[in-house]
Image 1 (tube, helix red, strand yellow):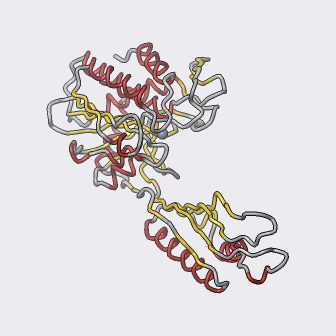
Image 2: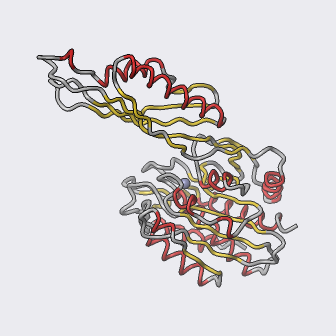
Image 3: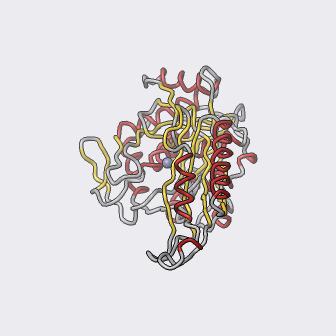
Length: 370
Ligand SMILES: [Zn+2]
């Protein structure tokens, strides 16, 4: 059975190890040791080198009967502030002293995975091949997962333990995203002596912005300009302005249309004023939608029913490693671990939810073995 004290002790131990993105060495070493103690085949890849981090993705193979291959994955990095994390346990809830995040995002997933393997080993349960993947740099753009050679393991199904919400919640739909910079290049001039010889980049940009769609575009699509930078002095006509923007949509087609439309508006407007427009838009992550009733979801639902967890499907507004794995053709859902108020210093998680996440992992492994 699950040893709750062992599970929570390891969770507390792990959250105390600071692991901001690209600086996952500490937690990586902890995991290498823990996984080797479990007698698993452990590998660290070279993703860290590729993205200028100090640790690679860590993967452990929990060899089973070979009937199937199931991947469980959680990310090692956290957002900041995380230099010194003081976890506090109160009334069955784990939180911090308010000076840092907790890092239950995503160490709750990691702790539950480790305990699940221990329980399966201790009880000698028959099980399929289980791949445990611990990714780096998820929080800064799914970098670890993008460099992870998932093809090498080719799992039948993947479970990313990285969502807010009660255990039993499956994220079956996530958006595609684009991000980049819109830059208008005008012309500098003395604002008092010869303003007519300049082209105010902000003035041009404001015309374009007034024509573009921003905010919630429709029920599936959003867009935002989050940072605007430009100008040199109050008496200089602004020569250049750059705007950081992003858009997300559950429809890849809509996002492509949106990018084309925004580009056209800016190009046309820049031309009207004799300015130039530079667009550095890039594709972010690719969305996914796993259909209700598909084998993966039916099995998760069955596992939830077996242990009395209410099963729920929901969509997410953000990306996770599941986006990357689905894009590569490996059907994956994101499973909630009970993490709450993530990315804030109020982050917390209920002990019961970490235990339930572990129970669900064990039950899913059993169900996928049938
Ligand atoms: Zn996360």
